Amino acid sequence: MKALLPVALVSAFCSSMALAHSAGDIFVRGGVASVMPNESSDKVTGSNELEIDKDTQIGVTLSYMLTDNVGFEVLAATPFTHDVSVNTLGKVAEVSHLPPSVMAQYYFGQANSQVRPYVGAGLNYTLFFDEEGKGDLANTDVNLDNSFGLAAQVGVDVTLSDHWFANASLWYMDINTDVHTTVGTFDTDIDPLTFMASVGYTF
Image (cartoon, rainbow, N blue to C red; front, side, top):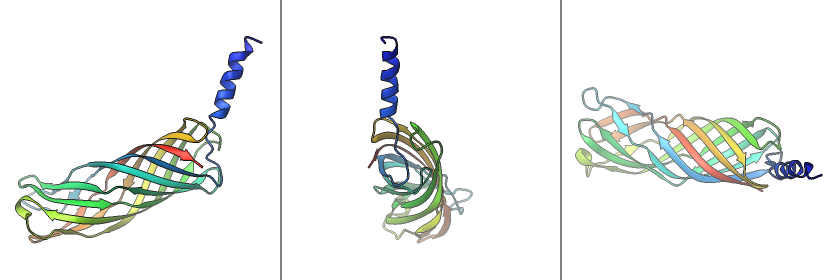
């Protein structure tokens, strides 16, 4: 009996740690999300294109499991703010955006698995606002068109307790915009990778 006691305890612990991503479940994730642009644009000066720096903010997702393996997720975040620069000119603008996205997801493994990797595909709508010219474009109008495009993700959930779990996910978003300035309009692909590390709760 003494020899069986540790096995029984481990078995009970693992059973209580089963992650309930099953049909009908609703869960939220909250954490930090870092947007890392992979930008390219029309030439601004010579061979120089627009350059966009990364930013990290608070990210939140809300998910619903349609079946034990198929779910839907909505992504929201606090506004991301990026510096826009040109190699020969330095910082020329600052812009904020929100990237709400809707994803259909497929979760691998069983509903009670302690680790649930998943993939997703869906749509992203990026809303740009608070555009402001800087440096050579200070006190001039700078505007970015909103963007609608595809999105994809990979991620994994790892059980922490009956309701809590840890998450890591990587998103790709197809973001294309026209940057309107007083010196011209520049077609720009931002196409960022977004890494999110979060903690989730299952209801």
